Amino acid sequence: MANPSLPVAVIGAGPVGLAAAARLLAQGEEPVVFEQGETVGAGVLTWGHVRLFSPWRYVVDDAAADLLAASGWSAPDPEGFPTGRDLVDRYLTPLAALPALRDRIRLGVRVEGVARDGFDKMKSAGRDDAPFLLTVESAGGVTETVRVRAVIDASGTIRSPNPLGASGRAVPGEADAADRIVYGIPDLLGADRDRYAGRRVLVIGNGHSAFNALLDLGRLADEVPGTAITWAVRRPAQRLASLFGGGDADGLPARGLLGVQVRAMVDAGSLDLVSDFRATRIDPSPDGVVVSGDQAALPPVDEIIVATGFRPDLSLLSELRIALDPIVESPVALAPLIDPNLHSCGSVPPHGAEELRHPEADVYVVGMKSYGRAPTFLMLTGYEQVRSVAAAIAGDWVAARDVRLVLPETGVCSTNLFDAPASSCCGATVDEVAAATGAAACCGGGTPQVITLEPGVPATAAACCTPAAPQLIQLGAPR
Ligand SMILES: Cc1cc2nc3c(=O)[nH]c(=O)nc-3n(C[C@H](O)[C@H](O)[C@H](O)COP(=O)(O)OP(=O)(O)OC[C@H]3O[C@@H](n4cnc5c(N)ncnc54)[C@H](O)[C@@H]3O)c2cc1C
Image (tube, rainbow, N blue to C red):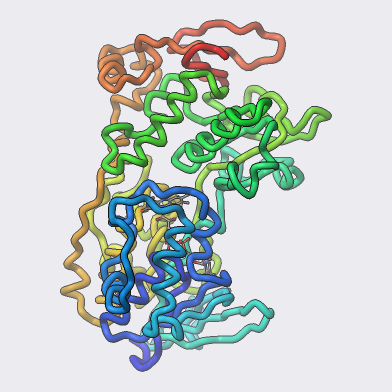
């Protein structure tokens, strides 16, 4: 460990970064927080109009609450659901304004890179005793270096969204169509309303961000005639039953409800759902932009919302010895706990500094970024991570290893029942599951109407076990 009189750097003043600072203070450590935005919670504010699916009781860190309580903070109703902006205005901003924290947070300062002072990545002898050297750039473009003894990277992933391309890279035409594309969840009913009202909008991706965008678009379509929604997902028609999340089984009911409401939109024919679609290119046309897949092109649209998730920006850590899982891009020990290929239950076992450590001593990636590309991160997870990490940095490995975390279950488990391959699609077990969940699984009662999306080919009802091909699906009554 480097000189103990040096501070501990926290990169990012989001909910987890500020919780890390509070935990470091509780350990008698000296934090210095760098936030590239002009306010704390700048990442959250990019989706400030979105209502969280977690109630307040799940999004306030205990150590932060202790600091706030001592200042006379009136805590929000623990059962209420904040928007992202509420989270910043009612929790993060008052927290950052506390005397204990305010002079330890540097706003408008971006961390460009982290290295060991005097040691490039190759050099080993004496490495662990060297301080870290942060290269930071302030809004005026001034670059400086800052020495610290440990680094907590809580910089999130919100600023590095996944591209539209199904192969993980931007597709030809994606950059040229930038003025038609928004990555994430635009403020469809507020600041961005005029952009989408009365337009044809394509939403690509599934998950809670896509659900939020679809629900807001549905409300906009109710208010403004001509607003038309197409939703394209990679999932084949045979596996749509699990598309809508955990529903009633979700330990966070507000999260389960998002999928239930989107399901109702699909059932009502309020949107066109295209399954089995993998975007490969975007082309301009006189009638709008055309997104093509590997087998068919979608009808032209005016706007595209890409909700394909986020990935960590690892560039600032490139001079450090960071060990990441090659699939998830999370710390290696964490990956099997969160890899959506293995399970999609959000019930992640407790984990802390032990699972988050890297070959480079005294560096921890925490918060949303610690999950790499996995989408199931919850703030509660991050708060327990930073409690453990702060203890480890302070040298208290007994407390660091004593991780305790009880997370709400998602109920969205990708069991073999839901995600059965096509060959077992018509098995009784899947039907039973569909019946039990009320979902119109491909072989259940509500047989989907499937229209093959090929120009000139008439719409035909298709059996559930047809070979994979892009399909426009209206699960309920056609409009
Ligand atoms: C739409 C949406 C809804 C969500 N709802 C919930 C929910 O209901 N419940 C829940 O538990 N979780 C929810 N999450 C997941 C997760 O808890 C949040 O994303 C949360 O904000 C993650 O906190 P964080 O501190 O790790 O990252 P962030 O909140 O993203 O904060 C990272 C900060 O680091 C800053 N930063 C980035 N790079 C640098 C740099 N190089 N130098 C300096 N600063 C930098 C950013 O500006 C940002 O302010 C939601 C996520 C999204 C996107």
